[in-house]
Image: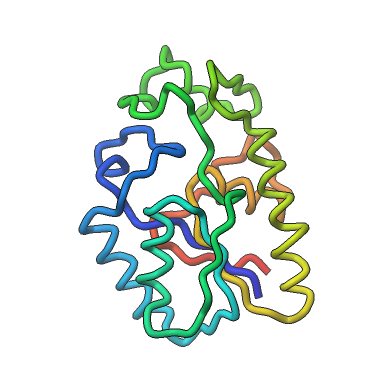
Length: 182
């Protein structure tokens, strides 16, 4: 089995401040959601968890897997998409003039600004992880949990579900939502 979970909520999620690869911790709501997910899914056993190196994902994985013997392995390829100097911007989703807005409204035509990461680069990272880690373990009958982020999670699910880039965000998970992929 292959499962994926998005990290719990942070203060930046709450106020709609663009996070990307900025390392923001969980807020109290995010902590509570991870604990609630632990209780909700306690009957699912995972052989291994692969996790983003960012603290919001690591803490979610730790809380979600607390009391289990599931190892948590950090993989840099699971880090959230970098938005460069636009990280920390507010109002990006509702402001068509914001340079990052088209990532969310028209991902197929997104052109990264400055030192922001392209969707293609993030997609390559996600596919590399799937091909080198997730698929081989799944094929051996292992139950694998991936704990990551919104855009990176969409990228992983887009590969598996063969979602066109224009529908990229249709794969967005809620915070601490567990999705069975395979």
